[in-house]
Image (tube, rainbow, N blue to C red; front, side, top):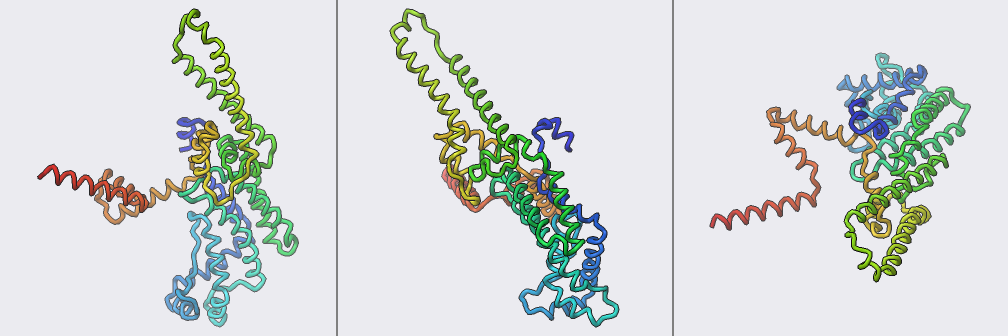
Length: 376
């Protein structure tokens, strides 16, 4: 698949799934034997409750919350499932330990020190869980968040490396592995022109997320080159359309043509200065919509607006396509005799918003009314 994408869009335009890269960083801690032994102890307790109706009922009846919580078993193919298993176990640990402490057939339970180790590791893994959720949405711009998320993760991992550095060997090893993998996998992220340009063209981030000044300067150079190329293309189109007149007829309008050419030159200079003006204007809040900003400022920054819309719509992960495949699988599981065209229509209708459904209802009602009029 990677070879096909490289052949189709070019190697420089291929982006790997950012959420999958984050998941690979978290999976790197599975290689630590001490951490794996601790997770295996929790996993055996979760399996023990899931395989016993009696103990599941005891756990359910011992809780005061409504609805009662259930243990979660991790699945290696599901992102962050290890985090969810450990997090749920920490919540249920007092109740679980109270049930298993008097049962000789029960699996060994973690000690108080091991439970404290799990709690500390969860604080580190939660950073990657939040980043994965932040980048896996579908209703907002994502590709411009890649560089800011990487910078935030690096800063927070540096803080975690300093905090409680020598208390626990397992925690220190987990933090070191996560920090090293984060550096290795994303060390060249700012050199990718898609990530860099989308970050600069997002009015929420611009240049504040860049760690390398050279990468930011290179990105501005790309923008100016693209703008110059577009100005040359537009000038060539105007020259092709222009009607050539004889010198005798043009003598009277020489002064006007000179003023017009000077104004065109000033317009080109103004467009080049618009990049600097955009960079130095106030940043938008993180929860703002960058697409709305470019819609409102497409007259003020015509080139930047068109370029931003071209880059900000690029998906940063394969999550939307995988969700679509999952929806298709669930739909086919209910009715296995669906034809391909019918399945495509069902998936389209399932993805419509309430506003689009309202439009479709009005469209079908209008067509039905028109058909009735034609009949009568």
